[in-house]
Amino acid sequence: MAEGDRFHSKKKYRDAIAVFKKALDINPDDALVNFKLGLAYLYSDTKSKAAGFIDKAYRLNPKIDNRIDYHLGTAFQNRNDFKNAIEHFKAFGENNPNLSTIARERINECLIADSLVQNELNVVIENLGRVVNSTQDEYSPIISSDGNMLIFTSNRGELIKNQPHHEEIYVAHKKGNVWGEPKKLGPTINTEFNDAAASLSPDGKTMFLYYEDNGGDIYASTFDGKDWGKPVPLNKNINTSQFQETCASMSPDGKKLYFASNRPDGFGELDIYVSELDNKGQWGKGVNLGPLVNTPGNDDSPYIHYDGVTLYFSSDGHPKIGNSDIFVTEFKKGNWTKPENIGYPINSWEYDGFFSISPDKKTAYYATVKEGDNGGIDIYSIKFLEPKFKPKPKPVVVEEPKKPAPKKEEFHDPLIDKLKQQKVFTLLKGKVIDETDAHALEATITLVDNETGKIISKLTSDPASGEFELIIPHGGNYGVATERQGYLFNSINFNLPKFAEYQEIDTHVIMAPAEVGSKAVLKNIFFDVGKSELKTQSLAEVEKILELLKSNEHLKVQINGHTDNTGNATMNKSLSLKRASSVVDYLISKGVDASRVSAKGFGSERPIVSNDDEEGGREINRRTEIEIISAG
Image (cartoon, rainbow, N blue to C red):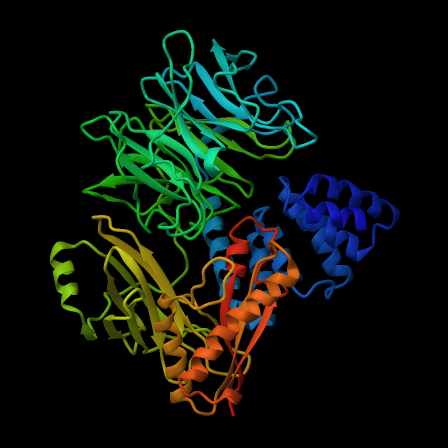
């Protein structure tokens, strides 16, 4: 058991599975072993096997883990058993009211996935077979425009210093309908470190590559008719010195490059950017595609089609079936359309990504995991049996129909009028609802420029529907605070780059009643990495806490600091306490009685979701909270 736990902590899930299976052979009815084996499967490449073991553990001992319903819901979700998944997510939300928001999000995912499965695409999906795929991982398939050359990445290479297999780039050619034996590209392309193919230009003369330099950069190699030339890094408008650039795809006219990066001006982890070629033949500054395309999660592997307007990409932040799905958006009338999940069975409960499609949109290739195949991630072909592939209509999620939001505004800066005329802004719209039963709330919504502390807008949501519309300027860091007497305020953060595109974001602002045990994450509290001093941009948010305490003199609150599980546990706990104390010290300096505010640092002890979960788990767990500890 200890050996299995050790493998699991190092994310060596296949090894952990082998150990737990041996333990289960000794006692098949051991609830703890069943549970641990199920979790190992849940984080492995074969997630659909998890449900049977976690469900058995649940039946043997329903209290085996205080988040068993969450794990079991996820396991059922990952094998398309949405009815059982929803039941367990509901139970998880009921037993953990402070995590009910997460439960609702997962339930919504199940509803979307169920709708996609009910509208199954008319496609044939085939594994490229053992000639191309190995027992290791194969991904990032790049197909020439005539469909006869395949360039891909695989970690089937030799072991280096007992490290995992490193990634190298291979090429295979098709003869008739059969792929020939792949050959590794030469030392000009493949190095002694991890190398990955990103894409091929439409004319087939330029190959974009990913190398690990500077945290991860994009290079380009030119084909001279015989060999690929020495890769050259793209300029500093594309590559950054501290952040990661992963994939790139060139438009058919060669004038635009779509790429993914986790640079800090984005909306989440990896975001998709576009760069245009200037009149000197240099790539210009990368422009973020905006919050309609990019999410707080990972939006990666962009592929711009030969038509120049259809963009495919993988995402774990948009509503999805599994841990990463493929989405499609189109550039129409100067804007990107809202991305659509391309549907089932292309997207599944496992990883799906690196999608590319032929000029006629009849044949596509992508990387995914399917049980019973060669092992790891494999490359598959997709044949669309309809004349031309079109995304299925967006699945209908069960929710109230939207009505035009009311124009009930108390104040706005004159800048807003200018933005309305130019139509260059982000429109945040949605409704304010109660956390306990989702009924609509009338609440005050304030938009603040975190850099200056200036109030940009202040409005009130509709008292009957809870609906509102808020205009957010581009180019700045903004906090949106929603307040109502008797409730904890809600906090949202927007870090918007300057881009001349109109964007819309739909959301629900969920308000927690001001009761003992109620918590809210403070999204506009900022600290430098490894430091505990409040940044200036945090002051507007801390002032909201001050207002809450002044208007509710009976409340006593605790500021909680949390980290993920990376780094030293003792140092994490100390840092989380210092950060929470910084907030408390500010409030006391502004006249709040010290008996009404306290600080506590939990380090990584209270994750909201598992830190092993690659779907944004660690990001969610790094947070500062306000918790009501006395309301009388």
